[in-house]
Length: 130
Image (cartoon, rainbow, N blue to C red; front, top):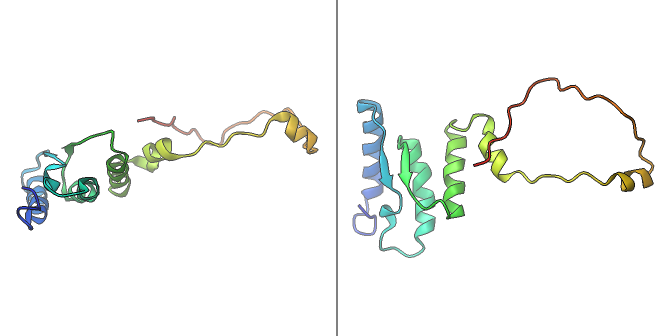
């Protein structure tokens, strides 16, 4: 139900999701934008709704993956719920890669160059790009 028509619809959905997950242990799917139907600036409501229903037990949603606000909200919920181990998907999506200084610039600044072998102290899993 859209919250514009039934003001308690959001609360009812979350109660239902919790019961479905805890009592029946079933997976659930819903159309994420149905809750905001008929309201202006729906993306904001949808972006707030998704993390709340994820925390209530919803396992999948039908939504627009091209809306960055929704993608960020779902990915953040996955981090906060412990579904994104070590935040690897979040880091892979949003980390800004640093470019190393060109060698000529480092040499001009007086940096020493040495050939060394680098041995990692622990194996890190490769980043997943979603």
